[in-house]
Every structure is written in structure tokens, then in C-alpha cells.
Length: 541
Image (cartoon, rainbow, N blue to C red):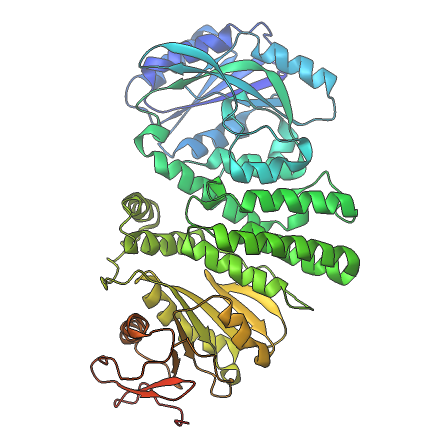
């Protein structure tokens, strides 16, 4: 049998009540040059027998039976078996419009260089049987900004797509670990190489019902989407987000940066569903630094625009973690000769950080995030420490003489302990101007004589300095000078107690110290020492 023009992959699992209508909508196509590959993913409700019955009556239907492995696994098997030149996906509870394939064929004829199409969809509400023409789930972008817009909202409905088979094969298979966003991840990878074309017609019907995965655990859809976006940014530089633009051209470079900054500035963007993080902004920062080395005039122009956006968002952002990172990047952008190299972010670290922030604020949204992390990542998160404190920013000045790797390793337990109390930590170290992250913690390097000024921009409630050579901090910041790694839980309580007692000036009298500690105050510094040697005081001036 010759290969058909169109292959339609239909994954199904225990949807016998909908599968017949789904397959009937394929059989009713006005363009009959198709094959349908039904992948039964271990159904136990009669779906397998129903699919076999259709295959017995019409050889264009082929049925594959496999143990239950999830939607991505079923789709991947269907793609391996597909013989057609153009691939479609139809969920077994959804429907094709009778002219779906006819419309796609005409679009392929009109746009022979395009490898990826998508369209509008209709929405059928199962509870009321209401059928309506539906818009996209997000704004329709121009073709040059399709990837960044997908970070904001997923505007592509999976069952509307039509993708050339070799193009699909070139980007790999669906990711089974993304049970709720395997399609979103695929669209990002396809768009990076094959910009899509929108068909301004309604070609499918999406059925909305209570048994859909998106209805059973709706938050997981957003969490997986953010996870996929972060993973994509880990693997793609800023230039790859705009494959149709020449970012050496000043006008196009400014347009690309402005579009990215618009997305990063919106806290409702899908990119942030797991918690705020600087992945997109960091990629932009990396690109700006490289551009400035190549074209100083354009680079400074881009840096100024990005810095202005960071300053604006640091003031407007309600999320304390996000505001802290906005301030961090703004401070880095203010330094001449900035260099930065993107380092992969772990979506789980971002989610855990967000969980502690939500829990410290008493936000019930923490429960869904904890459930997601336990179900899909096997993490059982502890209850945050109850301190009655609302958290704040802790500035930590690392000891440059120790070496960065060792200094960061010593700081991490403190960062985690403070996060559990709702605090945000920013790390500072002497060195060439740069910005980076250690997990989710900003690390800013700069000249030693400017670290005080950099830290002051964050208005920290406390400064922890492990650098004995650092200059005195200005009045108003409680400063703990330590010269050895400390028990992180004790230190976290110590910092919290200090910040709660401290006024705008160093205290005149000693506040009640934590057990085992005593306080020393000088005119410009407050120092701490512990009899057990975990904290050793610098000489009092």
C-alpha cells in the first residue's frame, strides 16, 4: 500500500465512551488520503476492542497495543509507525472537523516552505453540550517572536497541528517525564527550527470534561509547562529564541530585547508557574555582554534598556524573591566590563524555593506545589520554621581568599535555612564584574571597594560577612562577621533574632542573645562570637 499524505496519531487510554466519535470524525474527512494510527495505551475499558473493530472495517486504521506508559509514550510509538508525509495528533476524546485535512492540504500548497501549521479550535463543554468557536489560549504572535510568546502563554492547541514528518523526526520524540506538558515542550523545539504558520480557521473540536488530566490536577499543567520552558532555556541561547531575526542589526536587536523584557516583566507568564527565576533574563544578559564586546555602542544601548527594566520591576514586583533577583541583575548591569555565562537552572530548586516562600507567607497555594513535587519528583518537603518573622533579604559577603567553590559550599546550608524562614539571600564576592546564580541564589562579583554599595542596593535586613578584609558597612545594617562555617539552623535563628531587634542604627544595648552567643557592637559594626568556636569574632574596633 502506498504511503498516504497524512498520518493521524490517536493515543487512547480508557476512553471508550469518546473513542468511537473520535474515529468517526477521521473517517468523515473530505480528503481521504490518510492513515490513522490508534495507540491503545493499556486500556481496560473496551477501548482496545473498539479500535480493533474500526481497523477490521477500514484498513486505513491501524491499531497498536502497548502497556500503559502515558500520553508521550503512546505518541512516540505512533510517530515511529507513521508513514505519511504530514503528521497530525488527535486525542481520543476530541474531534476533527470534516474539512480538517482538506484545509491543511490547501495551506501546504500555498506555503510550500512551511513545515509547521496550527489553527483555531472549537470548544465542546461536556457538561452542557455547548459548542463554541474558541480563540487561542494565548496571544497570536508575529512569526519572529513565536518562542518568547510561548513562554507567556501556550497559544498552540495540540490537536490542531500539522507537521512535516522529517521536520518532526529531526527534533526528537516527546518527553515522557513531562506528563502534562509533553506537547508544549515539543512546540518549543519545533519552533526553534521551523517557525509555524497560523491557519485562521476552526479545524478541530476540543472536548472539555471532568476526567481530563488538566481537570484532575490543573496546577500540574502549569508546573510542567514552566519546567519545560526552563529546560528549553537551559539548552538554547538568546539568539535561538528569535530564529527569523538578525540580532546583529540594531533595530532587530532592540525589538527582540524589548519583547523578551515584556515577557520577563509579567508575573503571570507560564514561565514562572514554578516560581520566579531569571532564566530568560539571564540568557538576555549573556547575549548583551557578548554584544557589547563585539559592538560597544549597541551593547551599551541594550544594557541601558535592560537595566531600566530591572530597576522598574525591582520596585513593582510583589514577589520578594523576584524583586531580589531583579535588583541583582540591575546591579550587575550597572558595572562596566560585565561578563556572564549562563548556567543551567534546576526547575525543582526553583519550585522548592517557591514552596518555602509560599509557606512562610501562609499561602495555601503551597499545598499544590508540595503535592506536585512529591508525586512527580519524590520530594517530601519539611514544614518551614515558624518564627513569626516575615523574612527579608540577607546579604552574604563571601571570603574571596577561601576560593569560590569552597565559599559557595559553605554558604549553601545558610541559604537553605534562611529560605525555610522566608528569607532571600544574595551572595557577594570580590572579582571581575559578573552575575550568575548558585542554584537559585544570585551571586554578584565586583571590585572589593564597591561591594558595600552593591549590597546596600538590596536594603538588606542583615549582612553576614565572611570576608575579614572587607571595608566597614554603612550604619543601619546589622553585620555579623564570621570566620568559620556555622551550624546553619542556629545561624538562621541568630540572623532572624538580630534583624527583629535591630533598628535603623546599631543598638545601644544588647538585645537578648540566642543561647550560647554573646554580642559585640562597635561604632560601625556589630559582631558575634560563640563560646563553642563555631563563630569567632573579628577584633573589636
